[in-house]
Length: 362
Image 1 (cartoon, rainbow, N blue to C red):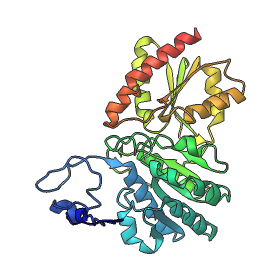
Image 2: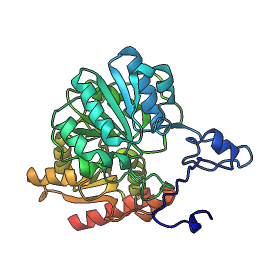
Image 3: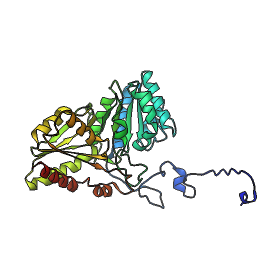
Image 4: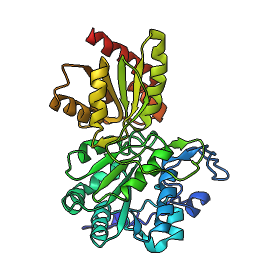
């Protein structure tokens, strides 16, 4: 009302308070930034079962940092989102929150690595885009041992198109010196992180939001190094190369195809760069068709990497090939299962694609 009576240039400063008017949100504003269903009266979230990828990452990193003081964590105002609260409390001298400044986080990590430390930058896939120039110039060009923990890779569900992490492979895969891996479960993520902390150069680990295991894994994980895929199931008719969370529906699809008397091999790809070229070459020579599946856009993704290798190795004439992933669009809001179903990234969709691919080879 006061502004209406004024003339000339006016600056109205509105000081916001996150959660204003709702006591639980005012008390814990970060917790209420983006949440699932909760009890309105108490403010408590609905209990979720299982052990998330973020928790697996955080637990492994904390253990590694306790053993080696050179291991440090860098975040950009996402301590809670990356599950690093306990790390920040127990090892405050090895934890750096730079605020909402992803580019600075990456450059700082490069400086820490140049000084002999082992920095791990934990950032959501969609936010890492903001630091592309720094990834190129300040880390990859220098071939510095920085680990990028790319959280929320793939479809994130209700947060919608601004937060789906479906472009990271396309904007990272072509950068020299950078190695890229994607786990399908908690144990794999832990093993990949341990291997990445030994790498002489930069490594990116992309993992999704959501459950990685029913319970926290027991025992000490073994390092899983780039360039090594895992053949989960042999088969002579067709091979599915699945990346990250696509491994589970790929195994289900292979089981469904038994009804068609088909023996389908399933591979947990694990490594996007470098690929396990020896295994891909072997499968191209021993099956009729290869199918890749990923929770990423098709353009520039994992399937594109496999296609490039098959072409360069002169293997495309020997085997039918197809890619499954997300189309050239901004994926809308929805639960992850809803979106997987819409875009065919389900056991049923994979099975249909396998049958269509084999028809092409006849």
